Length: 263
Image 1: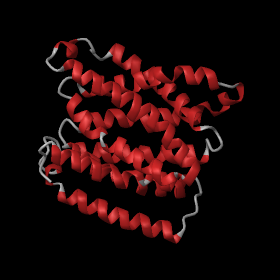
Image 2: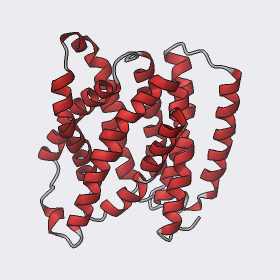
Image 3: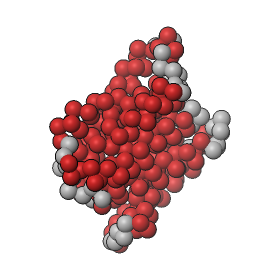
Image 4: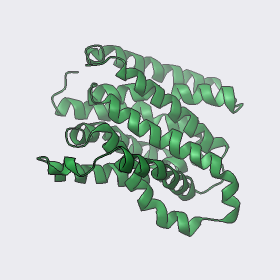
């Protein structure tokens, strides 16, 4: 079951980069990220109300970490970075997540690491580094520093994964997905209202297609996938769950090749 979920998540999340590439010509990074998190949070409100219990309020800080650090901020970082980095390269850089998951777990959560996990991590990291070095377009991007935004996003993912695995252990996946997304949607929608402009993009050609893709990105790749991912963390542990990012580059690069990007 763990490997099945791993495969499904890799397919869904590996497709997120080509989806963002298709959406960005219509919706700028701020609108893309805030609408993505805002719609995902709104979709989770019924689940949040249904599963909310009084004892869960003491876990509010940890839910906020998962919502903001694990979802809200990375969504904005990835949307911004992909204005100058190919979708395939973005998918490859995302493979740094297991390294940060291991480092954060060891440094802040006292997580013991087995030799087999270290070996598997190093092997996957070597593959990720080789893929990163092969992506010359990172160096030729309009702003090479955009790649650093993706590295920062993977660090935030490492924090979030460990928080779910160690601070929200035993909480059902529905709750560990619904509560953080509802929390993250509040600042996202406020930022959209204060700084964003979701109306003007809808006047462009192809706006409705971009909106449909944004709905899919929000409801399936963000809301539903987060439930499955949190279940995977409880089922097989944070480090195993984070290895989805070793399979995602394969999917992202296949989409990139299909879209005419240079590999």
